[in-house]
Length: 117
Ligand code: HEC
Image (tube, rainbow, N blue to C red; front, top):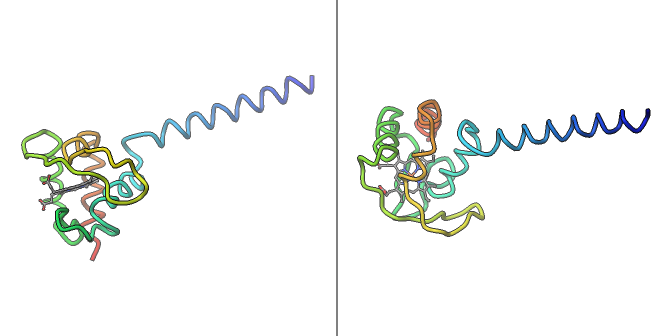
């Protein structure tokens, strides 16, 4: 009796954990996505790297347009790597990054960086 109550509680907790893990894995987790941008574009979108442009203070329209152009491969993407945040140094590019974002992600992230100084 006692035993099965505990089993039920722990399987319920496992389910909650699985849902939490699933929702943090990809698109839609805006803070995690912003973290990823900042790993190359610098904290607050102010770049410390010569070959990575600033995102801070650009207009949201301009940022969305650029992200869309990358995400649909209309703009050339040069090969690059993550600069910080303990991420793998495997080569990637803006097309691969932009590709995983939904339209909503692009808009919210663009507005976030447009509002940074
Ligand atoms: C792995 C490093 C890396 C990551 C991660 C990254 N970027 Fe970039 N981004 C670059 C580089 C390098 C360029 C410039 C080279 C190019 O045009 O391909 C760039 C260019 C851009 C541009 C064009 C700016 C301009 O001046 O036209 C925008 C907008 C942009 N990134 C937004 C983002 C957003 C938003 C994220 C997060 C979702 C992000 N980037 C993540 C490296 C990165």
